[in-house]
Amino acid sequence: MLNIVLINPEIPFNTGNIGRSCVATGTRLHLVGKLGFKIASKEIRRSGLDYWPNLDYRRYETWELFLEKEQPAREKLFFLSTKGKTAYWDVPIPADAFLCFGAEGFGLPPEFYEIYKDRLFTIPMTGPVRSLNLSSSAAIVLFETLRQHKKSGPLS
Image 1 (tube, rainbow, N blue to C red):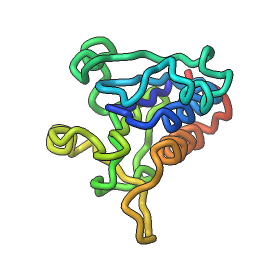
Image 2 (image 1 turned 30 degrees about the horizontal axis):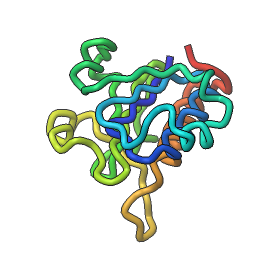
Image 3 (image 1 turned 180 degrees about the horizontal axis):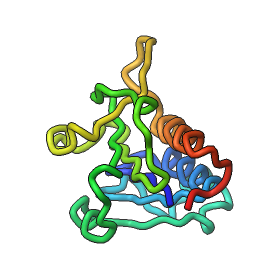
Image 4 (image 1 turned 45 degrees about the vertical axis):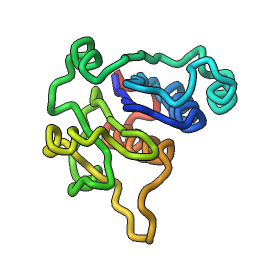
């Protein structure tokens, strides 16, 4: 199963939109660290609409608890950041990958840039912008993974 991991997400509408994309594709959502909102907030419900009850999601207070519980192989971790040097489309992404995204305001935790420097990827941009919206970024990489596996439905 494909996984999206949000580390310290701040904006409920982004998380709700990502949750909706996860429901649409049979992708599991992992919420890790400090959240800038409450899961039961109306903003989450509004952006996820009535799909939120169908979302397969897991909540972890820390990255360490996530690693302990999920035990992802390092080669299945894909960290997306504007600081990445390799384009996400230049690597094969396994159908059971963990697509990891940092917070909207500050990206991944600072230590991740050293610990996971070999697993850091970017969405290339040519215009004068610092970054793309988190929910847009997650959708871009999610659907590239689906394309790589030529599946229009849930990955398993």
